[in-house]
Amino acid sequence: MVFEILLDYSANSTVLEWMLDKKLSMEKLYASAQKRIYDFLFKYTRNPDTAMDLTQDTFLSFFKTYSDQNLTEEKSIMLLYTIARNRSINFSKKFSTMKENSSLNEDIHSKSVSFEKKLEWQDLENKLWKCMDELNEDERCIIELRHIQDYNLTQISEIMGISVSTASRMVVKATSNLLKLAESKNINLES
Image (tube, rainbow, N blue to C red; front, side, top):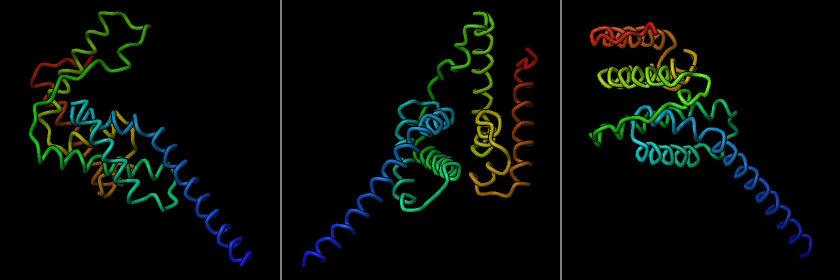
C-alpha cells in the first residue's frame, strides 16, 4: 500500500513537473513573441483593439494545438505567424471595418533624427500604407513579412504555406506593384 502511494505520488510529481515546465515554456514564448505578433497584426489590420484580440486568439489557438509538442522557439514563432495571418484574413473576410490611422513608428522616435525628417518619414509611411491598402491581402502580407519583419523566403514560404519559388515571385510582384502605386501617386521614395 505504501509502495503504491509512493508510486502514485511519483507519477503525479512527474506529471506536475512536466505541466509546470510546459507552462513556463509557453509563458517564455508568449513573452518573447507577443509584441512581434501584435505588431504584425497591427500593421495588417491597423486597428489596435482588433490586433490585440487577434493576438490573443493566435496564442490561444497555438497553445491549444501545439502545447504538447516539443517545438523549437523559431518553429513556434513561424507557426504563430501562420496562425496570425490566417486569423487576420478570416477576420477581414468576416468584418469590413474602416482602418484607423497608424501611430508613429517606434523608429521615428529616435532622438538622433531631426524633427523635419521624422515628419517626412511619417508622411511617407502614411502614404505607403495607403498604397498598401490597395494591394490584395497576400501582397500586403508578403511585403510585411519580407520588408518589415525581415523574414527570408524560406520562412515566408512556411508561414504562407507556399513554395520558396512562389514566395520569391510574390515578393518581387508585390514590391513591384507597391512601387508602381507609389509612382502613380507621385510618392518620392528617394529621400
